[in-house]
Amino acid sequence: MALSMIELIGKTPLVQLRRETIEHASIYAKLEMHNPFGMKDRVAKQVILEAKRTGELKEGAPIVESSSGTLAMGIALVGTYLGHDVHIVTDPRIDQLTYTKMKSLGVHVHIVDEMGPSGGWQQARLDYLDGLLSRYPDAFWPKQYENIENPRSYHELADDLIAEMGHVDILIAGVGSGGSLCGTAERLKKYNPNVKIIAVDAAGSSIFHQNDRPGRLQGGLGNSLQPKNVNYSVIDEVHWLNDEEAFSWTLELARYEKIFAGNSSGSVYAVAKWISRTVDPNTKIACIFPDRGDRYYTTIYDEMYLKNKEINPFALNDIPRKIEHIQDTDQWSYIFFENGKCLHEKVIVY
Image (cartoon, rainbow, N blue to C red; front, side, top):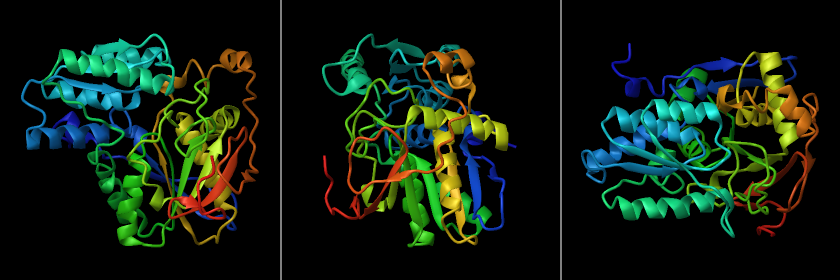
């Protein structure tokens, strides 16, 4: 029994996905959506408790952060539970369900009304946040994109994977702030230095130096910036999926595996399924499913929305295109990395 909602964070299940044939490797999914509000509850818990321990977060001081919704819920839970006012800066892409949840927990929600001249919505939120810091000089800003406690919060996740699986050969996870993939990867490499790390991103995200496309529909995956918590040196392979591919595989995840998740999980699922067909059947693949599908009920799971966006919900592309250097992509593509650089080019090509 957990003694509090904070203590409950991190106690998430691991499930083996369906194995279509014995020639396919086994896939194990860590269902991080079973945290109270989602995977980034782990980050909020680690960052806030550490800040209180060091005195960086003073008793009763406000907490301010920029978030599209996932981390916001974790900060709302931990911060308000511990008696702090929480201010979240977000943008118009926030879904009504997440907004309602935050308001119900007593969060002050600030929605920026337009993108800045550069940096997309992310930069606009950060600019607004600067104003909040001036207004509340004692406020604590978790800085999820560069706070070292972000990736450290996932060390426990890696330990859980080893305890339950015994051995991990491949880790597949999405990238937003870089914390979950890189934090889990760094810890897994302590157990197995040869573990292969595969990052999953959204087409039109600039994390791996593509040009940012602010109009992309995927939420919770990708970024308009290159977060400092992305440790490129631990990544061996990167996959990008476009909106239609991500959404259709998310719907397939619900149809076939009965896992109601968001597009981050759906994209990871697509990559894991493909990888399982290309490696030795004895390989153990671990993947992280971070988001439940609730916040996407008016988008990914809404037939009229898909129709209006001209998205085919059954467009299950399962043949990714291999590319040789970093370039903008409009379909599922992948590239090999070595020590944070393109395997073939040895440099990142813009």
